[in-house]
Length: 155
Image 1 (cartoon, rainbow, N blue to C red):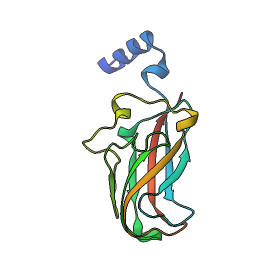
Image 2 (cartoon, rainbow, N blue to C red):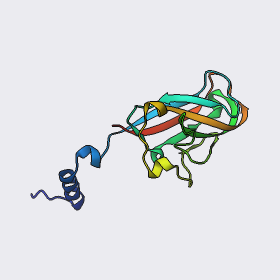
Image 3 (cartoon, rainbow, N blue to C red):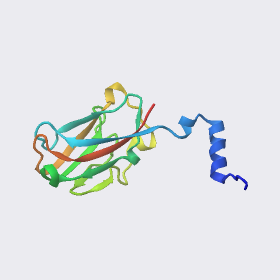
Image 4 (cartoon, one colour):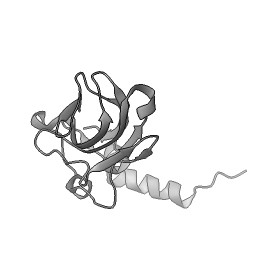
């Protein structure tokens, strides 16, 4: 019985010979972050969600949102952008409409600059924040309205 390589296997081996493995296949980590605030939230509030690892690169094309207002919230709809303290829509160029029961990618046909030009997280930009632009209903203190699955490429 012979052991035979596939074309993909051969291409992979050639790729590893030319580049470091972590360059060809970066280390990705996914964080499941609850969308929650310690105080009541209104339109135009920014909610600080999570500190990203400095030196990492957020991969917005892999990030998703899962919205579940019925579990713990009296809010029925929110619209927001995802970014940091320097650029509040760094990871979602257009506002993200979050309907109940929705599981979807955070970017739409509008592509943020961070998709085409990867942005390395710095100490000044490490805090992931949600910038709320509209809310229907009430998002009270402590209520979880869903989760973000944020994928980063580790340094």
